Length: 239
Image (cartoon, rainbow, N blue to C red; front, side, top):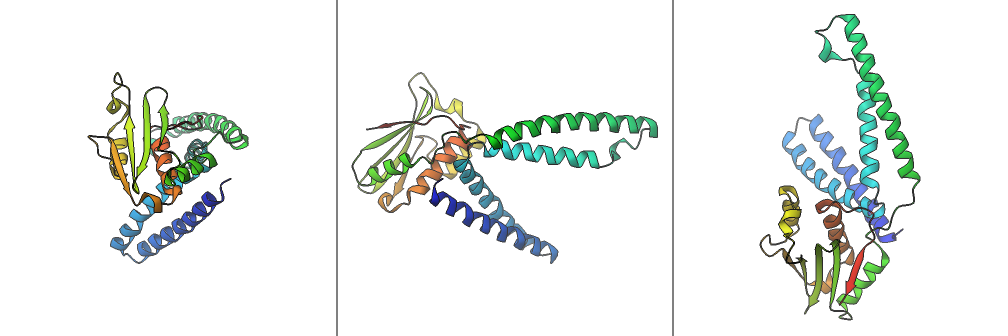
């Protein structure tokens, strides 16, 4: 476990709790403009927390999805099927029993998958100490460039630094069109990270002063959020 990552997660969890309680307080006071401000900050903090928890455990998204599915289905079983009010009582009871039985089977299977994931040792993750060491070496000019293979033989991310200016640049072989691996939402993510959508690159000023965890967090967003890569062994070339 990376102690820096633990500290960041704990800090963001505290921040998330503060923002959530502040939003609810505004709502209770009918201050909907104030609630909207806290809600926007809450969404952003939740996104960062999700990324960091994926750094901690590459199964986090799957575990969260299964827990949400189980919770949703359990609530549906407990609720009355108001949408079936147009049915006679006998048919309504039969339909409720049918859907409840189906939901219980899905819940049972989801619990099995959840137990397996929670008992599995997390796969190699992107916050490997090796990457942090390489980033420090890059800042000290001991190496010139790092190449991350995002998708095997198809998508690569180059990270270089020169005169305190870092550059991140996507590369693909001539026979591979980079844009084909993106959709509108993932392009938006890359744009929010500062990438030029024509050249697929970005510059990082004052690179030597930058906390390596910030680069690590961005790598996590690219792997997890943009390309949906979880738990695969990382391939890095040093140049």
